[in-house]
Length: 467
Ligand code: UDX
Ligand code: UDX
Image (tube, rainbow, N blue to C red; front, side, top):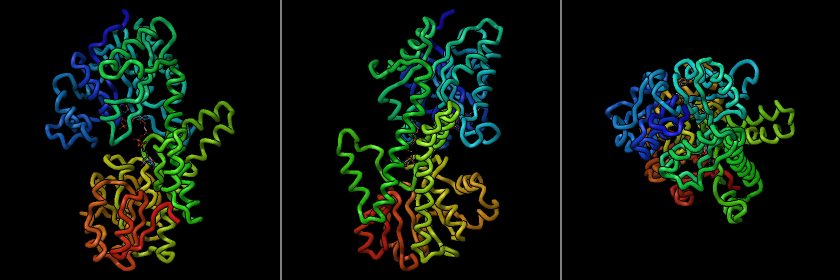
């Protein structure tokens, strides 16, 4: 059998990537039944919750799409075998964290979930299928998946495609609806081309064909890692200049504007920050570094590793600046952090700069109060447990989630802005100032507040990257 027409799609992994991507495919392709499966029962229950505010991820516009499609052609389930059996096309969108043990520890991607998925597909499949890698994977993973699938002995034929996701959190729905490009990598054989065409037809429901790029599998896998590495590199580049600006008296925002006006450089991804976070940038660069090392390309590996070293420097530099400005100690002082998510409009905190800043301040014995409109106290504590600097009890003693922004900032010696949530700008800053310890410091790590107005109120404002 040749898979030419896709009527049933299964996606393994109902996370930040699998959930929104499948919701949009269901919305745009009403004739296709899309089933998203996950081993995590709680997550699937949340996706099925009548109350759409309880969806497991917060993403603007997502609830509307789920409301429209769920129960019609979009389903969420823990019955992985059934969904695999029914589908002509299976997306793998499980997590691929940095390996935390053994060979490649701290660098290479942990592919154990991918392998488990491949084995499960091999066991269950009774007819030919197209398997699509959606998770970001090291180059040549498709080969490993193929080798597992081709040795089932069942006679079932599989085509493996690479279709990396370029959506950014917080704008996932917009990014999916209006993708700059869709990348589909497959084998250069007649069967491979048929599979590429089958997936192309799905995206062509809403993406113009000229934006659907077809490549070989390895190019597609490497393009995803390279795109994330280039984006992260721009942030580390401008952050390195922010340090130079602070020392030299220049203003990094003026520099960013001046260089971004050059159309060859472009103005996007030049916002200085406390450091990039999120599940992808660091993981994907580490992956690139690991792959380069495994081919003995040490100069290439060192070049990209520097992007991460600069990012780590930026996070600690920001925290240490708070300590040195507050007369070289924050011991026993209340410090208010506004923002914990790794960027605005998401509840995702993976690798967020906020946890590293909080951790450094706590090591200097500060009393940290953090407020984020979408992140719970338990999540903050979990993040600190992941850093493993001190016991959970100690973390709970030194970190609290403020009930609201005003309570969070009351009696604080300093406020640090770590996420660029729009609501922070509209706060009653005069009221906040009146209730703070004096001198009242603000460290704006995102440069979103009106600094001149704050100075008139009486705040001492430190803007990242301004000398
Ligand atoms: C993940 C990868 O991290 C990223 O590299 C890739 O580009 C897309 O998939 P994300 O969707 O953000 O990103 O991950 P996450 O939110 O952790 O979702 C993965 C889901 O897979 C989880 O809900 C997990 O329970 C599920 N899973 C994992 C399975 O269903 N089966 C498994 O064997 C492993
Ligand atoms: C990124 C890629 O953009 C996306 O294409 C890929 O599919 C997944 O990884 P994401 O991590 O969701 O998406 O968010 P992104 O908007 O890229 O931001 C990543 C981090 O960089 C955030 O912490 C953000 O605050 C920071 N950032 C971004 C800056 O510090 N400065 C900028 O100019 C842009």
